[in-house]
Image (cartoon, rainbow, N blue to C red; front, side):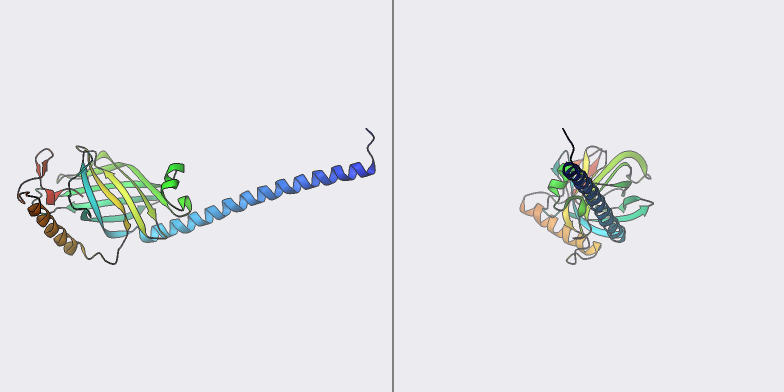
Length: 232
């Protein structure tokens, strides 16, 4: 085949066009990655500013998957968030409610992770809106000092909407604390003592309406644990 000046021109033009297209695609990918990193940096900054200090959330305590707090809204729980380098530290300190014979404490560090494909489907906005925090090195105390026991936490936080959800597995007799999706620092939530008084009042009403003795333990875990005294 004889290469003419015209054929050579079109060949060079095609090579130039392909090179430009590939460069453009690479630039687009770099721009998208840079944008994603920028979004994550801004979200992480918001997470650090918000997930810090004491917060009151409503949680349910389950034993073998059965909700023992009885009320749909769960019971008020006081949590403390802090940071150790890049790790989120979640703590419940000296929780003692009602007839509880000892205080419960829990602490775990949690790493910040990206959501996987299935988690993104369950959380609108995916990794551009949510952060996942996961920890498997927790410690639990039942009045005898914090001891590492493999307690775990897995949760999600949306800094834009200030929404959080998580599950703590105490690794003790299949007891877990479940925090269903809710607003952090909800303006309708009062201080801890006020919310706990409301919970105990509503709990007593529920037990009376359902023929439950308000003074009888609801279940045993290595001894009596009262329904208004469940570790949360």
